[in-house]
Length: 412
Image (cartoon, rainbow, N blue to C red; front, side, top):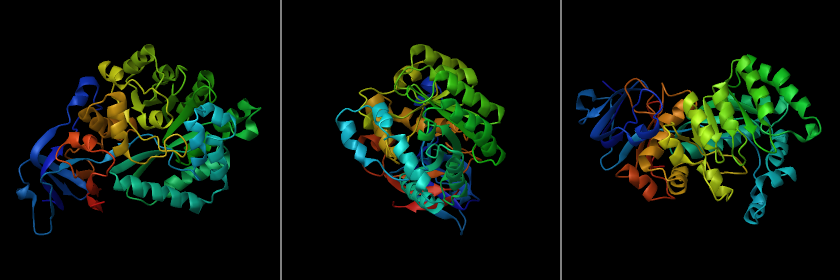
């Protein structure tokens, strides 16, 4: 029996025993005129037919005729907790000023650091909840969220505690990103800041279960390969799982470092070389690509998704939602950039935003696909098929969002 039955839809299951690699990303597991049965927050059956044998007097029935039924979207790379905005940098970007030059002039990350440090716990909480509301209405049901705009002990801990204490339908997976930039008070003492992270902040975060992952911005103007390895190895010693911002602008070798350290994911990868792509493949590192950032920074290039898929990697996609380089909470928008900018087809995009993204945050056993026993995070989309989601862009296709088996959004 079931609390909820969704029937008559074009069911996209994205079913898989693990992340989908290479050609496997073409298979989205379509069931025509199928049904999904849900009981007590879990999926109890996905199959052909109308699900009538699961329907009782108390069962809520949703007729999805003419609509796509698919897993809730998973966003595996965001900078959700921050304060303030940076629309003042838009004209500089339009005039061709490089991101690193904006950062070196006191803008970029550092301007958000000032605003985040000054913000109260309540103000940060309300801002996060506002973004989560937007994400949920656009179909995101699980999100990874990084710290990284505190850049000291007090404000990094504050940021992670905000995320830990949020009460919202969207599930949050927390990442410590103290190694986002060198804060201004340590500009002449890089080693001092790195030691603060590895000796004080990271042990406290680990001991108090404030984050599951550790991340590092390995980039020219941020942290070198040697510094990144030192920080991430300390994270491994403390029990964190590893992610890394790698090769976003310059070919730093961050993707190969991710492979060397057994990272779960390497992220950005616009400048990743063929050798680094090979290294990620050998170590089964998931590339998390962020085409919205390439678009917004007017980089003139995107990560080589086609090359990665051809090499057999399990590509994932994320918004990179942040106040400076991609102020966008909508994974539906990222679908368009991934397709038009990187040449990914609709099936690849859907797998990259569901099952592969779930594995990129170590949640693939519970979310990311419509399979018996998984959490009932389900979207019903106002689209006749998966191609339409990208073809008709700039609108919200969400008709229903089911989160943990309950209706969280209805008709947006």
